[in-house]
Amino acid sequence: MNFLKNIFRLFWRPWFYGWVFFSILFVLPVLIIVISYDRFYKTFFKIARFWGKTILFVMGFKPVVETEQEIKPDKSYMFIANHASLVDVMLMLAVMKNPAVFVGKKELGKLPVFGYVFKKTSIWVDRSSEKSRKEVYVRAQKKLNQGLSIAIFPEGLVPEESVTLAPFKNGAFRLAIEHQIPIVPMTFYDVKKRFSWTFFSGWPGKLRVKIHPFIETKGLTLDQLETTKEKAFTIIHDELLHDMKNNH
Image (cartoon, rainbow, N blue to C red; front, side, top):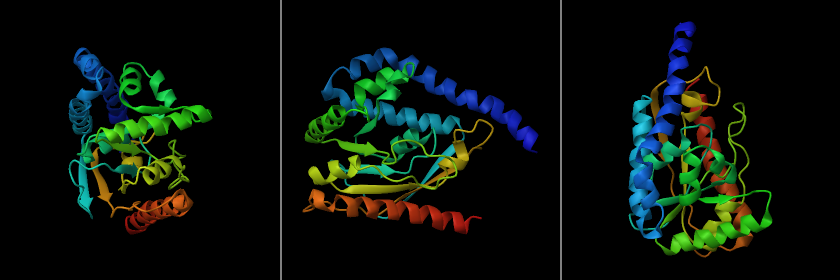
């Protein structure tokens, strides 16, 4: 049975990379125009959401979302989730309805085709540069002033597969507190087993997501950054452990 699954994966994995690359390439002429102007960002986000949902669909993934607190349209949020898979961005796009800008590491800009779009539409950061990290806050303020939300995977990098949840970095929480926007913690339960970095692994199926009650930052100061970060980490970490216990 494993042999047959690996034969399937031999074609399924390149199918993913092919769809990601060629789908962006196909609409690149339109994207070049749309992403050249800030006022068209909401249009770009609609295209990106459709792209994310399409990639999940052609891979045989079905998002199943449980919402514990409703997200209001036309309100800015800080969306955060655990980062464990290549499909995390697509899943985040499929779940979010409010136009949001991703914050990610500058290395993503080196990827062919995708990197060009990433650099033009996202807030990228060089984690080794203090100047770059400071510029993130300026760019985030500009996006928030435009009525957009921010999306961050606070672990920074995808951790080793044996790690349930890596420690969170400060960026998302500093931004949320400084701009007094609610933090929306989301747990992605299945992304690691569905499509991890290991080539001969994964399988089509449900991608369960829980949108937890928001962490309000109104009235908080940076003195509460650590406790806010710990609260967000605990919510997602405990949820992952609870799910692992119930499904093993």
